[in-house]
Amino acid sequence: MELLILRHGDAEARSPDRYRQLSAYGRDQVQQQALRHQREAAALQQVVSSPYTRAAQTAEIFTRLTKNNRIDWLDDLTPQGDLRAIEGFLQQTQAQHVLLVSHLPLVGLLIDYLTGDRGASMGTANLASLSMDYPGQGLATLNWNHHVD
Image 1: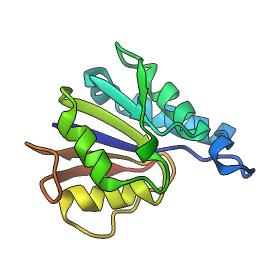
Image 2: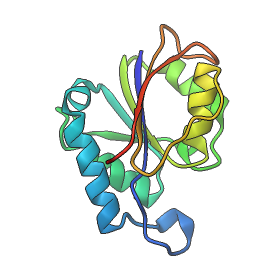
Image 3: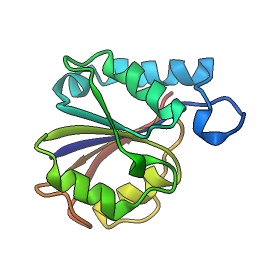
């Protein structure tokens, strides 16, 4: 499985947290990542996002480059989501090229959980690529982690 993990772009400071929208800068960040990774975006078979507004907007911008711009929603991709539930989701999907769009602290924790490493750093609109034969704790390899210049 090829897994992309994308943290949402910069968001406006307002509350409640669930409804915060991307800032103009955040939309630009995500578009830059999408353009930089057109090849990876074109290969996606499934896009799954947190239902929070800023993550949904990030997924929508990124998937404009894909053949299939359908977005699935997973409550466990919210900031305090359940790593084991996400692992279970990945084990059940038939897709081999998946994008997950989420938040801090979850994105860093998920990378650490899947790779068995520690200290993954994910700024706004960071995109990480992981490879694994089977999605499970400690079984993935981090290929790269790209920030927006």
